[in-house]
Image (cartoon, rainbow, N blue to C red):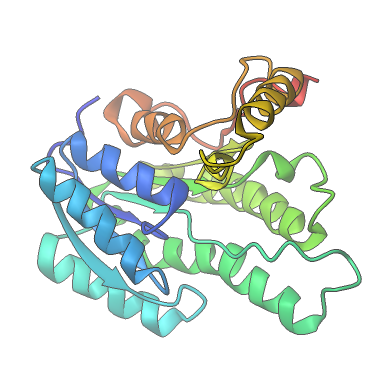
Length: 258
């Protein structure tokens, strides 16, 4: 699934899933615009890894809750690389607040980034995609679009809204050859699953407890990796997926079956 000749923008490319997608798309030949807002060290690491593998990338910064900053970012990408072929909306805020800890400010902050930011980025890239008569838009949601989180109800609400944004956008953009699909990952190891110190005298016992927990919660026996999400994102971004739009694909190792 080559992405050679494509220009791709991944938001939140400095950490976790966004970093994994950006690196893998670069490996498949895409010219990558690596977006970040606060994770400067992370996005520099993403670029370093792409550069080492011989890929082509450059860094852009914007607050995706701010439409003026998004517009400026897209203009910069277009002036440097041409119209965007692939948009991966990934940048998100996750506060892990319970129902009563949230207030109006935290609610707005999460929706402004996780939902409004996705919507505004879609709006910004559409003119170029319409002109080309093709485009791929990928939204990173979560299994919590379907299942309550039990750790942050507002986060779950944003993920449900992303799912519907993908469906509605797919209908409206289909006549222009632009597809919109959503990936709904389950638990993904972005570093927190590897925090047991090798010097911990109970390290082996803790690792065994973790393995047992994963076998109970994940039929495939492990949590996901950013690369798992990246592989699916690359397929959706490729020509092979041209007949798929409006889909929400659960990628959770079977955890939702239990």
